[in-house]
Amino acid sequence: MWKKLCILLPLLAPLSIEAADGKLIATPGVSQIEGAAGGGLVPWAQLAGYASRDEIAVNAFASRGSVDDYSLDVFGAQLNLYDRLELSIAEQEFKVDALNLNIRQRVLGSKLRLYGDIVYSRWPQLSVGLQYKQLDDALVANLLGAEDDSGTDYYIAASKLHLGAIGGLNWLWNVTGRYTEANQIGLLGFGADGEGYEWMLEASTAVLFGRHLAVGVEYRQKPDNLGPKEQDWKSAFVAWMPNKYVNLTAGYIDLGEIAGSDDQDGLYFSIMGTF
Amino acid sequence: MRLLFTVILAASLSLSGCAGTQQKTLYDKLGGEAGVDKIVTHLVQNIGRDQQVFHYFAEANVKRFKKHLAWHLCDISDGPCDYTGDSMKQIHDGMQINERDFNHLVDLLIDAMYKADVSHRVQNQLLARLVPLRQDIIYR
Image (tube, rainbow over the protein chains, first blue to last red):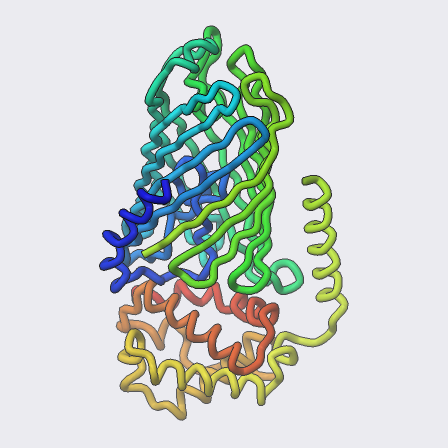
């Protein structure tokens, strides 16, 4: 994964001459595990990078989450067109230690900003998005009883940053509704016999300590379609944005039960470059 | 996890509690007339050195601009002033300021507030007061 990033970064470097910087630092958030701008687990209403209505932003990110019996590596990129449309790609590699097996999934995403600006508009910024997910190999999904090896999530997200709201500190919240039939975000396939699409609630909140540091928590409700139990995901994170070109996120993740192994918790790290 | 959330929430509540007990106006927290003048002076210096937005101000009368900006900031931060100068709409009509340049100017203002020793929290409170003005400033 790091090798891929090293190859990609120099290709993007020439674009940084006209780097988009038309947003307050830290307000666009970071990358979430399916490639959208968000907070790590949850896609937010913001589009990735610092592009204003007059600019284009290109971003790349790499993330790793490790829990007791599994780990997930994600590598991806986003294109933000004029703070209106976000196109994203994410390559996920889910390692199942016990079976010495890797499950790969590609996620193609798009997000359309319908209304507002997280900082400036009177009402929260509102966006709709979709994430098309395709498993590389459906073996595990089929064994567990999933119906499909590809599927699409649809979501609507509202987000607002309140300047100086908490003792003078900036406070951000985001609420997302996701219509999905993905099992464990798609890594274990889509749907199951007698199970279909459902609305899931996701939420995030963060406080910004200074211009460069955000501390927050996230919650992601999940469906429970398969025989092995699936539980809601939670995280607590710290994100550091030293400048508008790079951000680093570290967090604690609690993923509950995954494919028969319970109490899966551990650490999450992510790095994102924006141009 | 739950502990962390509780700590964040408790910290948030105690911070807002502190702010609530203060009687000082935002103008006082900015340092009154001297403080606002300092912010304005640093902002004008920042604009003067800035290639991206300087052209919007090239024709402006610097002395008048500083006076009116300080007057406006005094009013908006609950200071002892009543701004009766041109409205934001009147000033910015025809200037075609885009979102990128507006947000860049906000960055210059934040930098000016740092240079004028305005604390991060007071900076945010002033920015919150200025936010509603944006719609009268950009793309006009």
